[in-house]
Length: 239
Image (cartoon, rainbow, N blue to C red):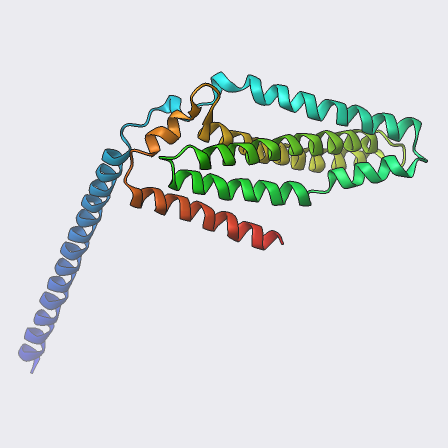
């Protein structure tokens, strides 16, 4: 009985060893197959989009335009808020105008519609019309965002300088609201960046969109619909 037990135990050990070796080999083959699949997908994507260049999406040489628009809209709004809050705090018309201007509803709606038209422009990148429509909507949304930012920053500076807040409340309010304003600024800047991707001041349609038109229609539809789906979900969550 002892000999039979030892033989069976040895068989069990060999079986466990074989199972472990088979599992390790299977796992190794799976990892290798996944790496090979990743390389194939990467090479496929690179082949489809290799004609793009980093300068096609780099806005460094075009920043003068958005900076000018930002100053033209945000600075007068900032000065108006400080002027009205300091010298005419009793005038209800001024404060109602500031409150309505800061309200993000118009900016959200036009900005979301601009995002949607950007997706349409990517799908129909062979045509100039969708790109021009997307550029106008995105540019106007960016200008409205600059106006809202100027009003918001003016009210922020006025509230920060009020004597109703003690030192730690002023510091907490300044840090938290300042971070939110930075987020709003970059979110608004994305609107201009998308308009930069679809339109060129000299040729009408941007280089990015021209090269995107050389990509297969299936890829353009997939990218554009995915972009629009994400924007639609974000808009529905906000509403």
